[in-house]
Length: 557
Image 1 (cartoon, rainbow, N blue to C red):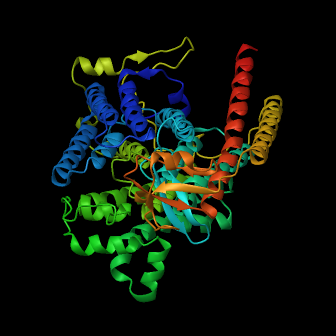
Image 2 (tube, one colour):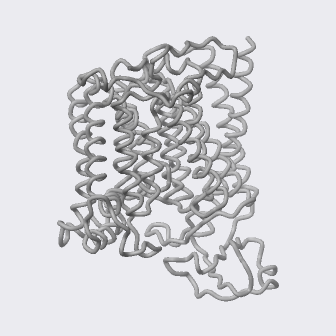
Image 3 (cartoon, rainbow, N blue to C red):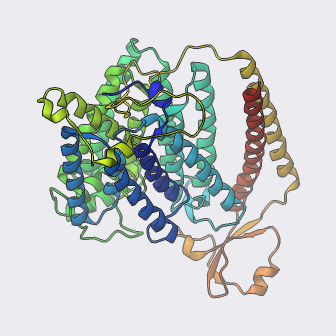
């Protein structure tokens, strides 16, 4: 049915594939720019994405077996949507079922570049003050009262999950030697620390660290070692543990063990217990009796799937996800396994796996796996089920090649599917390469890296020595969910203007809004963030410009 990833990546786009990429990019860009339901840009992207997905379905050639499966799954999805009102499952099933005839690696690469641009743009716009940022004041035991920033996303935890998705997209497509993988993993770990500095999402940081460790270990370690076999066994147990811990744990555990588990997941057990014991269990989901709000919501993806979307989808997802993990272990597919494990752990403390966040990229892997299974199963059935069908002229239009450059590409042969196989041990993208990197290019890149790091350190030190240190932060009381250091009070415009320049004023909206003053660690942490950000932006500017110049010289040489 399929070809290797390398040959797929060298081919031009087909019209059908282009419409899928447009669907994926529109949805990813809307969430990557911090948009949410009800905002005009989000609604516009959603409408355009829906049209692109419908066009993709009409332009794609399916076998009879694939068409039957696609119709059944889409029908079931729409039935669950009508019962629950949850659009997230529709987005994700479209992500999976639209993947027929699409290069999986091309989707990941496109998503990596797009989300990188969106993420850096949100960083720049919020840190420069060109757009407002969403923040909260929380009390952290070791730090006291601290401001948690979100870079324009809907919550600081969402910021960290977005960074997790960004890491997964890049590490899936980058062709790396073992030495390069170590360097890139360190780079992403530093980014993980930088995002933690702003989000203060400990769970997000732990999940990001866990993913980086899994990606490095399962791609760089020897698959036949005793330690690796132990790691494979633990990897096979992780997803079932996460599901049972999330769905059964809040109901079964009691006493000290319940309190310990609840503390580990930052009191999400209490919320899960409430919904698991008050909401009815339905085969195809139901509308929640309790409307989620700021004080009571389902922060666990598996509880959300079981309670809200129903037992059938819950069982189907768990079976497919577990089957993918076991196949990755058997086939030594480290990159895919790391994504599956990292997102499985993230689902314990975050609801993004099945809501409208459009950040659960494991549904791309699920789509590739479902079409892989469909091809294998269809060969055991009569020839009728392997017969390809298309909607008349739409099938010819969908297979038409779109060439953006004069580079020679392998043509798409008739009846040849462009969907990547679910990666196996023969796939070059599965593990890191032992290939020697170009020494001249490596030396040039190393010099640029050292120079940009030195410039970034110098810029941070200059800011540290020259910039005035803030003494206090004035924050609207509505953002102070964990209390105050001093009683909030009203401030007039004259009083705000008369404040010392060392006082940072966050989001003052008029004399009718109570403001709380924070001293101590709150302004000091803000100064540390600004100092580090000065270095980060200096590094990004110098390294980015230098790397673009190097690539330009390489192309001309």
